[in-house]
Image (tube, rainbow, N blue to C red):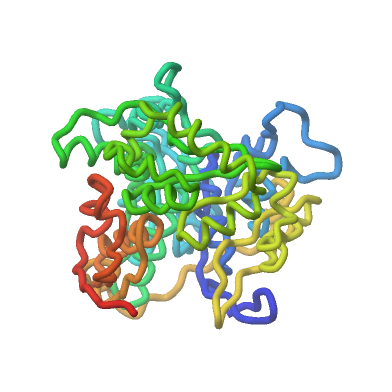
Length: 453
């Protein structure tokens, strides 16, 4: 293992990855592997990855930088090669890689020299990850798409925005990053099977399917509960003014709503049953705001957030790009680190007790590593033996609630892990009472109830 931050080892030092990507999803997938110590060789066309020149304002990349800040964030620490797909060196790099990440559909793969079946025939323990808008096969496989149109296909804008206005998409290319996360997770899950003597695999990731899973609660709400689609709405309350700024408020369960009304001293709002459900509050938005705003106006953001913590409510101060780096939480945990290209970036959001993340290294100039020796294909002692799903034999205790934790353990279960979800009898996971999310996130696991004291 190589040394990460604090001279502790990185967990993926022996992993060799080849990335052939011209979109955020592929670059972010391999960035997550770089963060954990993997060695990544990014193969680019002669003109380079288009993200090298990208900026939101379309302004040119400043002199002295190897590429745009976005490219430097996604690709710091990777090697850069410019190889022709028909070259012997290109084929050698693919043959020696543990993981190959490609962002293209089946129709574009031939031009890139990519054939997952051939790669797996030559390297049975390889993991070939293809990321495309609609997947490797199917009726939409050759369709053109963008982040915006994929969000529309997934149904996301259909329930987002003021009912009196147009639908709204999520900004910031969130779907691209989600696709990269799912691809990296799948690659590491199959890698575990390979390390236990099993075969590699072609992981076919559809961006549309990744985005649909991200928005699962809305279509599940309609399909499983047999009700019309969720109407476009806004949370009420949501971003609300305080004495010295704004706070963000959200409430998913009926219990959270009752706790909130107690906190803001508005018992009259407890008597309206429709307000216990988020989708029922829009019609009462004027009443809710008129009732809570005098209380909010008398208290500072800090006071409201502190009270919200006492009532176990999700309430936060409204931050922005200029303030987040100075938050006490962010500074104490060292969330932002220096990128050698001259800007601050968030470090990987996970910390490990025994291992460490890799330090942020420089971003390679285009083709800077063409003279590096090719990786040598590893020797295989025997043919891989099928051993079931990638995470067979992994046992997981899930003590989480609501969204992020159950979503993670749902994916672990889908790849074969045995997941036991533990809930408090007195205070079960609140997502059970929020439409169709519970069937989604508890699929493939078992549940145990415990009395928590």
